[in-house]
Picture 1 (cartoon, rainbow, N blue to C red):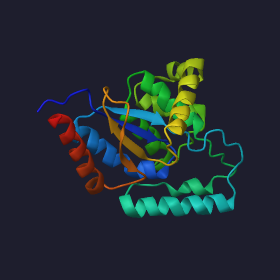
Picture 2: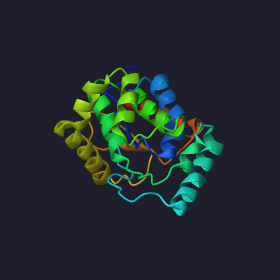
Picture 3: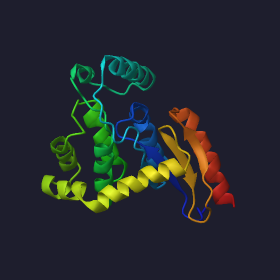
Picture 4: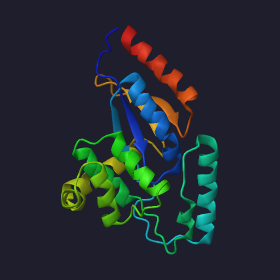
Length: 212
């Protein structure tokens, strides 16, 4: 049956959120299975952080990574924890995804950024490393860096963070569903959920759209 009013998903995520990395196969499968547009909103998990990680920070983060790996099977490069004085500022990576989004990249750009950080131990707070990842997505270095440094991309990234906050999103991943007709959105998941848990929710929501 025909889908009315352009149903779509709104995906609040951060490229340096480990549970979002764990959710990556689920949202990819969902996009392909249901053929729904996914509108990404960057969350700004730790945007603007300036203090380097200490041993306690690393221990806490490693515990999170181990849980994500055990639950989802997603790969991690544990050499990350050998870094000294790493500042866990997620704004540069979020801004990189926004820059790629403006050039027609979708979830694939977010996944490349996540894979670079979690599975390849690339420093996605560094502009040169971000440009390297962007080139893999088809946006060459100089063109990417011009966009990444631009006022337009900076402001759009801040708008994403503001939308996340004003929408009441406080954790990632968060996934909602809606249409262009209604202002209200339906929550699909707040936090990581498996494919088996979230797919039936989307199916029920879509059934309501096609039957309305």
